[in-house]
Image 1: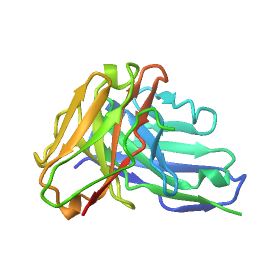
Image 2: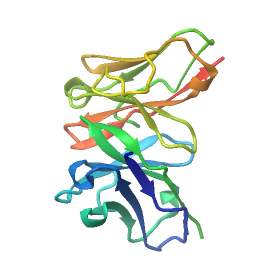
Image 3: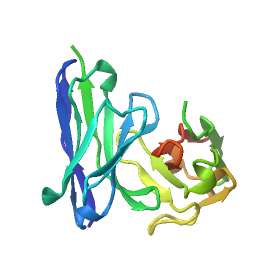
Image 4: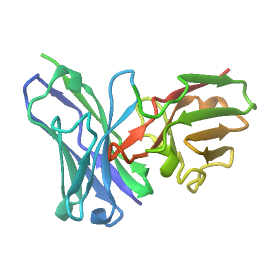
Amino acid sequence: EVQLVQSGVEVKKPGESLKISCEGSGYIFSTNWIAWVRQMPGKGLEWMGIIYPGDSDTRYSPSFQGQVTISADKSISTAYLQWSSLKASDTAIYYCARQGYTYGYDRWGQGTLVTVSS
Amino acid sequence: QSVLTQPPSVSAAPGQKVTISCSGSSSNIGNNHVSWYLHLPGTAPKVLIYDNNKRPSGIPDRFSGSKSGTSATLGITGLQTGDEADYYCGTWDNSLSAGVFGGGTKLTVL
């Protein structure tokens, strides 16, 4: 069974760094793009960026370019989303999703809640 | 402001049909496949439609998708109270070189 399992809830202070993860199983991780999607409280889904674990080719939404870093380690079937200096406005649920269709996502992680508060 | 425009909310009675529109441009819907997702708060989004009109296995044929020009539509027939959720369209935008989602539509089954 194809699964994406994300790391757990994070509570951080403004200015702190953070790296959350998304581990894939049940398929060859390096052969599907993995996207990251944000949902801020009470808001809709926002596409942040995407990585191809096979060669780490990465694309970012202009809204998130320079704000986060997406990476992957295909040897452990894991993709990452990281911040160097969190802001309160980064408080959100973050989902990873496997691109299993043409520009469509067939499997999603359970989401990681990130709360940034002083 | 989302690149793809959806109505904020739609509603219909149980058993009825509803459609949700998704309007874009030639840089996104006009030249790329569209997917539709169901999202319940606190759960992972689930794909309902991919490649404009295809249903993954396990998705009932009450759900359908279509695309015409720079707009796409999700149709749901035989509405059930369990269909109450937020629905999103998504695709790729060639100008942004990025994925895009609609703002989401909240479906209420009265």
